[in-house]
Image 1 (cartoon, helix red, strand yellow):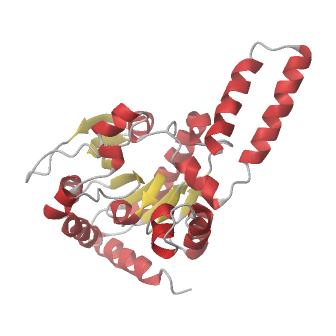
Image 2 (tube, rainbow, N blue to C red):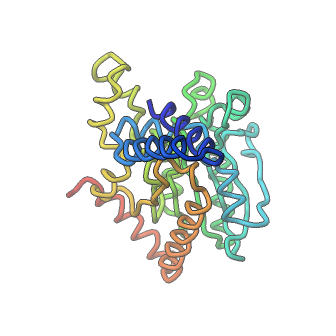
Length: 302
């Protein structure tokens, strides 16, 4: 299992700091073997890597990439949804609107943010902030990491499907640049509601799919344990999606996961965001909307 391998790698690297002689050589050999195993992952293993609890969360991205973040809460209709974190920040001194799914690193944190599964209020809050960004000419940057929208009955009663559909419709015609980064899980409409962007980037071990592998296996084979077959069938890895033209770029991670070298990861994301914004800044609003429409019409034609 991926979790056990990563934990063992972390334990070995900690032990190597004080080990000497033959013991150090043994640790080094085992470390190299683990790194070799973790450098060539199957689609199923990449899904497990994307779900690893220690992967960076949106709070870490906000702290590393932006300054002067001012959080904005509430959908102005019902309530605050803690599964979506959003607000205004500065990116290299430039005002931007930043949004993303909020996940926790332990059970208590995940219970507080509903495991990163927004209800309709979360998507309405996101749309409110995106429309505000459009009004003031701020680019929108989103971080996607969710197993999907919350599927509870109360969410459906309050308009879950309508909220997601409205986000898609409104994002398709936003007159400011929109950049999305899939940092972990990117599943179903819960992810797409923040992902209809001019540029979509993915971390190397993230996944982006119409449904979770377990959901796919339950539907096709009536057996959620056939997750590995579903991972292959869904073509959900960053490498697959870049080949299909669904995404625009892959951001490399350290071997063993994004959490193993966050400094380098944040530097890479920073460069990618700067390049994407620079490319989009030269386009007027009508061109942005027209090219965004054409981008999504092309998907699946090849």
